[in-house]
Length: 263
Ligand SMILES: C[S@@+](CC[C@H](N)C(=O)[O-])C[C@H]1O[C@@H](n2cnc3c(N)ncnc32)[C@H](O)[C@@H]1O
Image (cartoon, rainbow, N blue to C red; front, side, top):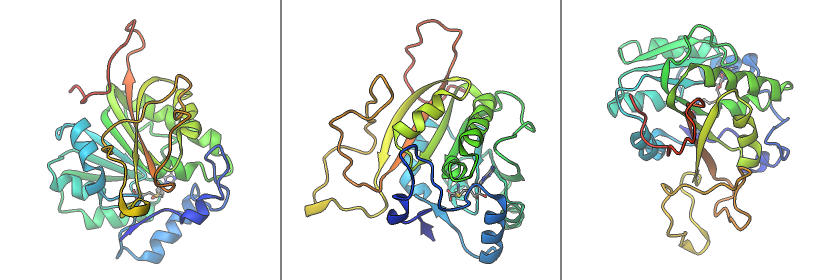
């Protein structure tokens, strides 16, 4: 099943900082009971399936990279990635219920490992362990709990620590740059950020013709990390994909583009 985390109407219940107050998405008990209710039978893919993200992942992440998927839930993402040639993926989630379900379900796939872990404390992993960290809807979940700013900071600080210099944090989110770039810039490392906009699955522009731009064309950000003033979002329910490359701050005059990860 391909599902959005919240309906478009519900999205409007978020405030301008990209924080939402409606649900307990940051609460482990909420996810445990939701996964228990589903009983291990269904799959929930937040925002987009792998097929929609594949061009970006194939472009930026070599198949042999060690990859961490944070807040994996019961998404089909990592199984689809293995079918596509990726062979070293660790999946973590705060919900022990979903980790048990996925460990059982994927026991026959040696390329996948599932571990119960809170993204705010990933001390199990050494510094600079991963070439790529993928987050589809997990920072968004943390932005929906009472201590959202602190939780988001703790999570991003951990992401910055365990990702290799030159590695990529791929964030797929509902949060526009005014809500997400400040969080990224306050995470304890320097990122080179590229932004892409992905319309919701099946989106058709009014009148049937959508802009000729490819979704693979990055959207330029202003010096303040905002969308250009004249930018028009064709689909108001689009998601944002931030490709954040960890930059070596000790190297002066970094002009590095966000290219393929160096292994
Ligand atoms: C919106 S779902 C996204 C699931 C999956 N990434 C997808 O694409 O469908 C958010 C997931 O984040 C997990 N989560 C929430 N808070 C977390 C935390 N502090 N640490 C680890 N996982 C967390 C939830 O259990 C849930 O599975």
